[in-house]
Image 1: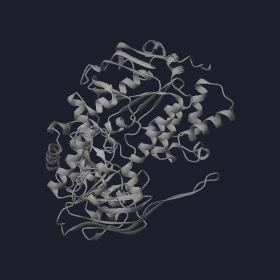
Image 2: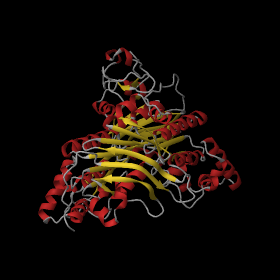
Image 3: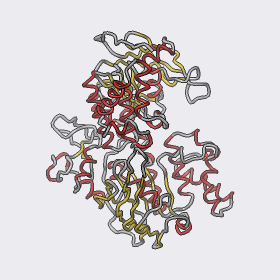
Image 4: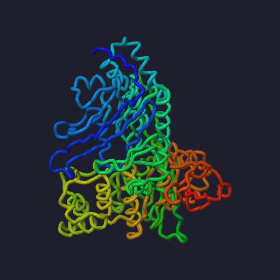
Length: 584
């Protein structure tokens, strides 16, 4: 392939989208995925396209990249102008020359964008080989430099690793390195931080901003989170069902949103209202975890060192009927390992787990002793549902396996679907016919079908739109109150933990470093790691004289670690992790 020499950069916009409309296949919920959308993006600036799932954000990104599944989904009107050329008029060969060299893209899920059987270095080398002829030694040095630029530790080890050996944050950094390898003029980031923990998200947002300043790259950033928007955006385009309902400078849109949909998205961001613990605790201890330990070992190979990961170190806590414990921490902190130990999906090496006073023995005896009264709601409901099984049958399968008559189990499934806000006819539909938020509601209904006493929810809202997330969190609260459930809620978002949980356990490197009621942990954090998690939460405004005074919508995060008495008068409400500024 010939090397593409970069053209002289014009003074005008890098990207102009003019009156773009994209058609959906017949039979969809609407005719056009994107309808008459226009915007422009200048060098060195960040434009955020915001909206819920199905609003058309990713369709715009895929149109620019030439990745639409034509002819089923294709542009029917408008222009996409990049470096003076209409991308919609280019053939596939011309688009291949642009992709990677002049336009880079970071996908939402790096594991689906990386080849699982190719080493990291080989995948980055493919990008260079597609556009340039570079000697092998020089190519390797450029790849190592790119991995170092994105802050990956030990690039010489990572370059020879496979994707599954890296954490989610590391894989996302590899995708950024891949996208920026040839210094593109335009970087498209499609929800690159949605499912990442807050500290990794903060690092990646800072990384994109640093690289943007260094190379003058224009960034088209797609997200549903206005907290992220406020951190990085220069300009904002708000999308709803394929239409642009509001656009303007970021500060103006955030401080004075005009459209009701924009206001709704902003109000759906968790405000960090700290749930107060119950005045009187139930005497019945549903769960007692006593010094459990879990270690993962990798024996390595001829050219690779073995690795030992202490995923759980002497983890202890208890939970009573009707209470919710939030387990928070970064990826790799051991949260999910503890959750899987609680439901019998992971064996633990030492310690004890008592359920209703009975010791749960790891292995085959676990389910018999717990009698299916411990249920789990998974992070990805689609992956946990059988795509060929109707929803009603999926919910009824557990009770039927326990001896409940089929008619009775199906009737109960319909009742539960109504309880979680879905219509009766949903029982006859398949998982792919539902949105992500609806599938999460189905996951909750399936867990409740077993009439559990303990519900373990593993990051159940991390990948959902903020408005859908708010609905699911409200549903969890209603379910807890109605059934007096004990819940272990695993999350990386302290705002979510504060709103839903009575108690919080902060995990770091397999150990609980801070434990207590939500108010104490979030308003008076003692451990440096907890304070770091709080600092990393995206927020709409900073404390300070220049903060917009919008008491209803724009909360400001208190200074991490500060006593309430040290805060400004407008930020002293102890019930809030985010204190709402009072208009001057």
